[in-house]
Length: 277
Ligand SMILES: [Zn+2]
Ligand SMILES: [Zn+2]
Image 1: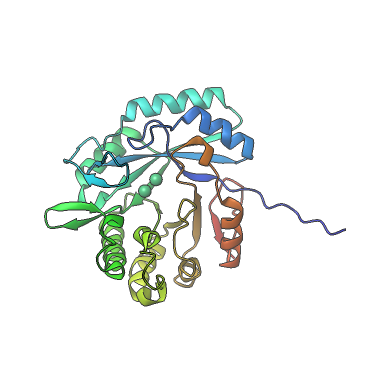
Image 2 (image 1 turned 45 degrees about the vertical axis):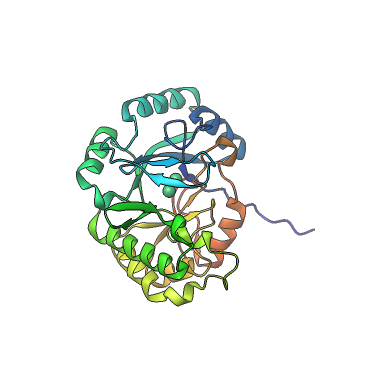
């Protein structure tokens, strides 16, 4: 009988808790319970710091960008106290502090204040919104227009974030709006934006940073992990982007197979990033 050695599950590097403004069912303690059940070697609580808060309309679907919030809407002291409680309660689980900064290149002073207050183990950088005149708009809301142009603009904004901001280590959900591609159009073709992807991946790799495999999407588009490797990308992180404890570690089996097939393998310890073959 043939037996397969199970791959050690990687750390979940992107988990939200009740300390994220958009996670009403989040729970740090229950996420720890779930991570232990799954045998995860580590979990990173990367709660949101968004300086352009989104509000959800009554139908629960549309996100509208609200007024500028210097705090990032993250109670850093409360968050750190909760992590300390969880570390005491779950001594056998490795818990890393973290933060997901939204558009930190547009809000350098605010982002620096949050980082100073938090002293986080891991900083994740994200583009969620695109400038539209003097406003920022959640990019999936723009997909009714020219969707390829929206993904192109998203990648260009991400390239600006990589070039203009060195405070984050991991780049989250690279081509976010592509997943919201209109069903009545021919499917999204990432090869049509090969150059635009390169303008993100090359400097990200040159800076020794990490590309996230985000299983909430999944993101990025299928060929992009291989492109990441081709551009010199040395490491990938796995993140469920869970906003509810039940989603911690979701889709990791498929994501691990995808990363393997794209030329990455586990790092030195199970909690480390995966590295290029
Ligand atoms: Zn995000
Ligand atoms: Zn997130």
